[in-house]
Length: 425
Image (cartoon, rainbow, N blue to C red; front, side, top):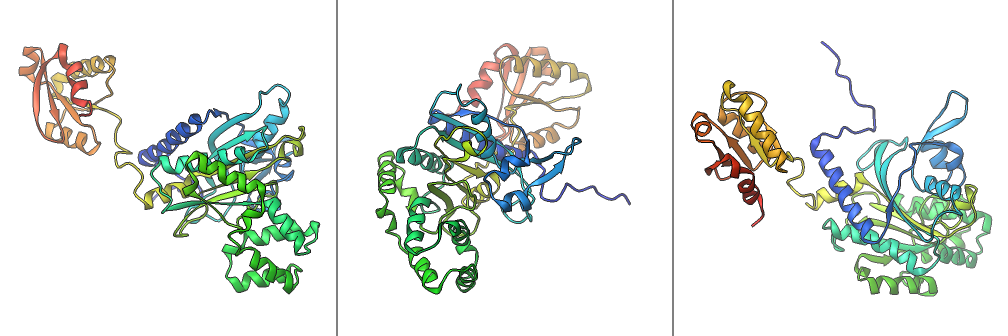
């Protein structure tokens, strides 16, 4: 018995339904991105590992990247994320670009992670980036776009929220707790793990890192203070901007949100389902130093990324994915009455396509009931039939596969009549 060859661990096969969902996500992403005036871009799938070693953090570089030598011995990687590629591209043409840049992209990324629900080694990612502006309103625009997407796909604030914090505010608070500057990155990583560990284990981790009991107690109190944002003029202006844009119901302050990547310099945010069933749907923040870290001049930037895996799971959970996805795009099924009708059916299908209709031709002469059943299962609304009597009269029969009703039409009027039948009432 032959062994079935399986797909590689952590990769996905996109059958027509899964491909339709992916394309539906892309269409909504494009609409939201373009509604804010953002331009689409793309970068290479392969990058030098040095690009990520610059600022992404050791875990991403050493543990999660697919790294291998090219034939010249240089280490390259399948891109694990898109923001460093964006920073490199901006740095390369920094003097030629028109600022502020409003760029978006949607493409595949790869991370060597343990596959589980909502996590794979190959995934698609939406990136939004606003480069060249350092204002609370720019931060708010990025978050408003994230909220705009959630709203566009039918997710409500009762189902999902965007949680916001500011690293500069947290640095000031860590300074007040006498945490040394060189230790703050480590403490940020500890804060980022707060929701990933039981409370007692998290406290043990903080103490093991070298924090005193007083500092740990102060940190626990800090992470419980939901009014902390009022101490930051930047966050006060940020929330005022969100209110003006009409999306504040999707957003709230959360002092434990810190983000794991090292390149964030200010605001950080993540979107989570309220039930806490999944990983973060999207996340991002301000990264004012990344372009200079890859060789360019310093320039402010803010943005976010969203992977398709968790987003799709969340949309399935709340019934937001349209039920028609995965059906045939054909509007009309042209049937083949018998073997002598093949040429006539081919001609009818060709004429209807020339008139702008989406047409599938059944590929063989078989029982009409079988052809109708196929069309119905594929979600094709209409079927065209031409038997000997219709052919002699210069007509075709058009059958509604949902209701079973059928009308005969002159071939010359068929395309216009079919378009009218397909028009929404």
